[in-house]
Length: 415
Ligand SMILES: *Cc1c(COP(=O)(O)O)cnc(C)c1O
Image (cartoon, rainbow, N blue to C red; front, top):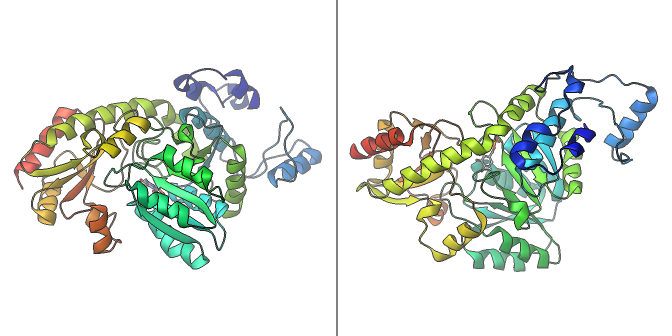
């Protein structure tokens, strides 16, 4: 598979995603990858087996062009290798990828690969509920200290970076879930580079990547995805990915993936692989739909406020958006009149959009973060993060935007 990778160097991402990483000759000529479900692999010789174990364990590095045989599917398998090769061109600046059986598996493996007892990590708030839970309930008892900073407050971030010792990771989710508040990736990377511990800057790029935001180009060390969302795009599977410019970081995560057993299974790799070529098409359509809808919803009398990148009013936020996002993306949150009652009434009246958590699928979904995705936060934290009683989060799909707008308007009229 190495040769195919090199033969296709130099083409643009939409071409590379369809041409690299897969050699039909290795799959009896099939034009699209086959699924290899075998859990174990037959060696061509005992020497080849010995060599494969040396490389897999990190005791030896493969020579340029050397063919290392597969061993066992928990370590790696052909569909993971194909997917990992094909996903790289979608993430600008990436050289290697590693796939996991969920976004949380990718985040957990990153934390356990780069943090040790006594270390600290800084993370932006609000963020994905699972990430916050992992930091507070799981890492803290292992003596890994999590320091939350409010997204969009640079002085809080700067103070935390300056004040923290044994700082090994700065974990940014931008735009923040569900308020869309942005964190300046380049500025954070510069501050991290000045810190004596040189913490890794890890960006959860699920909301805008890989099409509209390129953290590795802005100085981030590692990009993480819940591939459950836009990368797979149909709300029918779970997957996670981590990508980096520095292959060493990915190698460390791969070594841990072997121990944790959280590699993505062959069938899921195959499914996700087939979805990659349409990621930019879907995301562009979804973003255009969302922009048209969000910019019209602000005018409805029952809507107090719409959180959406093109509707930012804070000059600092506008500056960050222009510097790091190519398009505003397909998620917005809106604050409706009437608090929780108004929000629930709105959700109840939707006919096209469905009341469900998750995001990034071709279908439009809406939820009430304060009582669902973010319900583990204290009242005080919810208020501090701007997750109000009337806030509804919407993930816009690829339906005709006029129909979606009509649906939102009729639901708002009914509040
Ligand atoms: C969904 C999500 C995750 C978790 O991913 P899973 O695939 O559900 O494990 C992490 N971060 C963000 C921003 C998400 O939206």
